Image 1 (cartoon, rainbow, N blue to C red):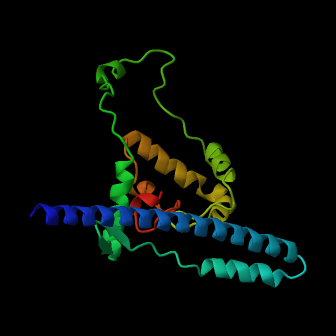
Image 2 (image 1 turned 180 degrees about the horizontal axis):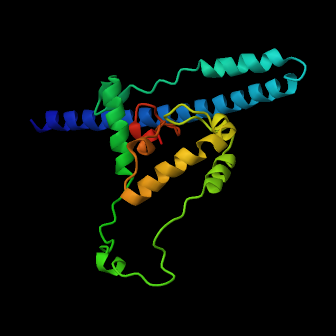
Image 3 (image 1 turned 30 degrees about the vertical axis):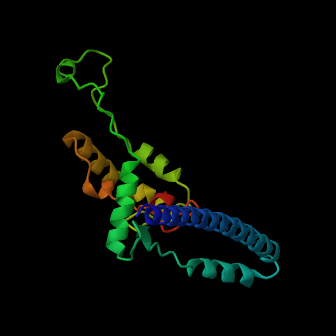
Length: 205
């Protein structure tokens, strides 16, 4: 009857309100925890810096602890269902990242006829010089992380004179054929939690 329907509606409304209030409280608590963790980390790092000159062991202990941190991502919660499978978690993150990119469909089409005839002063080629490659590698930050090949920046800087010629040949071939080697397209994508619930893919960047 009408009375029962109204009571059920009241109960549903109350449940939804209670759930929203609970989510808000969880979010506020997580924000506070993140803030306190950051403050705690700053305090620890400050103490390490102050004491490392007299006690270098403190610095190495701190570094080792950072290396052993749990960097696991997940589970995610999608429509009240928890996702634990790592492959599914990766797919959800890829979907989230892809949703942030927009394709501009208004880009004008390239008129190939414009490139068939060249005049003096036109850029028809790019000259690759070994000295430019050596300089570019020398300008790398020594503290940069290694890429997918596992080669550290410091090692590259030390061998830059030896690898300049092969790199020049690879780049020259790439330009001449208009192709980018598949190896150059590989990259590490590391999700970084930006705050909020760790159960949501959109909270990672």
